[in-house]
Image 1 (tube, rainbow, N blue to C red):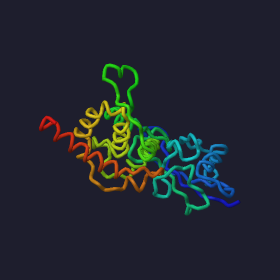
Image 2 (cartoon, rainbow, N blue to C red; image 1 turned 135 degrees about the vertical axis):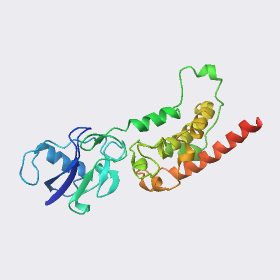
Image 3 (cartoon, one colour; image 1 turned 90 degrees about the vertical axis):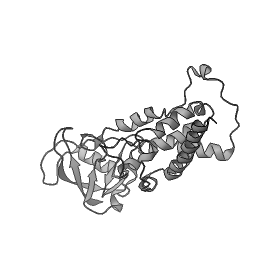
Amino acid sequence: MNKIYLKIRRRDRPEADSYWEDFQVVAEPGMNVIAGLMEIQKNPVNARGEGTTPVVWEEGCLEEGCGSCTMIINGEVRPACSALLGALSQPVRIEPLSKFPVVRDLVVDRSKMFEALKKVKGWIPIDGTHSMGAAPAVRFSGADRLKLFELAQCTSCGACLEVCPQYHEKSPFIGAAAISQVRRFDGHPTGAMQKGVRLEALMGEGGLDDCGNAQNCVKACPVDIPLTESIAEMGREVTRYAFGKLFGM
């Protein structure tokens, strides 16, 4: 077992200033960042031997499937559950995501992500679809099913937005995650019945035109969603849709 030094950026409440607090934990082999935070929670004493408040964070599945524990660790945005303490340089610097309002310590408010999904109707309607007409009977190929499944892996963790230079508090940009979900739902027979609505959203404020094509998003995605591929595909779809409207096609 080794002593691991953690340097955590904390904030007691949303309107308060942030501050750094140092901790020391005894780490067993294979211990991840979440386990280190749990050790602090059990014994909230900082590296100076002073009693303090337990560090607050979010977690869910602990297997890189929910995205809730995503934070900035040694300058890299990543899920804390798959970040092993023994593989990290010390002191391990842990910070909350910077593109979302901090609620407390490492907990952030990702509501902006879900507002973006609402804007693009990031779901497949079920109730009341009879009034929209019948969805075409389509047999998916194995490749098509795999593609939709790949896009469905998004956990709304916010990693792609954290590294995006176009995504910040003064920008209306909806970000790569929402754009990729448009591709996902437009690719479903029932979802495609609202394809025009979603493409209109991508043509509006905060849509595709706000993407600077930095391509940081695809590198940061912890589940390897082809985000830049989705952005390019939606760009082509928007162009076809716009020409169709212009020429009545």
